[in-house]
Amino acid sequence: MMLALTASDWLALLTHFLSLSLLAVGGAITTAPDMHRYLVDEQHWLGDIQFTSSIALAQAAPGPNVLFIALLGWNVGINAGGGVSAGASAWPYAALGTLLAMIGILVPSTTLTFAAARWGHQNRELRAVRAFKQGMAPIVIALLIATGWILAVSHGSALKNWPMWLLTALTTLLIWRTRLHLLWLLAAGGLLGWLGWV
Image 1 (cartoon, rainbow, N blue to C red):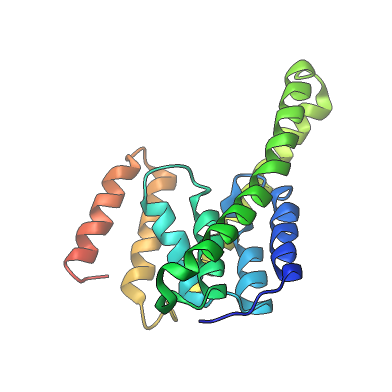
Image 2: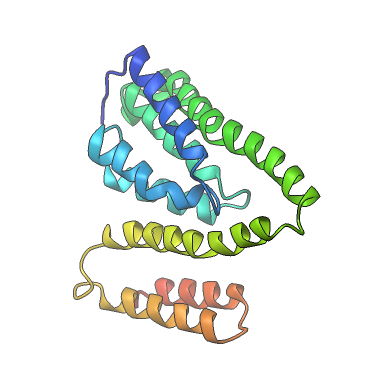
């Protein structure tokens, strides 16, 4: 995919991530549905496969959860630099995309979190602070479900990929109802994928 991004497009990328940063309650992954809407559906700066692959690769890699933002910015930059076929000449654009996306997602939320955490700790006994913490839990869960839905529907219908959907449902139930460690479930999913069953 090749793009021709202007300075205003790069600024729009930065400002979009700046605004999403303040909505990233529960982590940056909760804003993935809006990133998909903006980067894939509205701007067409990324393809659906690039978007989901960026999230999957970042989640599989060790390190912070926010790495997928860097990959999304990298892929926007690679596309702006002429695509993968452009080789090393696209890397400066990729570095710019990574830098803008990471600055945008990290600076506002980090600053707000630092200030709010200090204030919340000093006022932790206030009823409003306790209510706010309890009220945020369902919002975070809903945002995570929306992210999971965006990632799941990109793999086709439930009828076509029923083993994957069944495995997802069983894993969800096991996590919810048992104390089984996640690493065992990840290992089981990897084994089923290696065997070609899902």
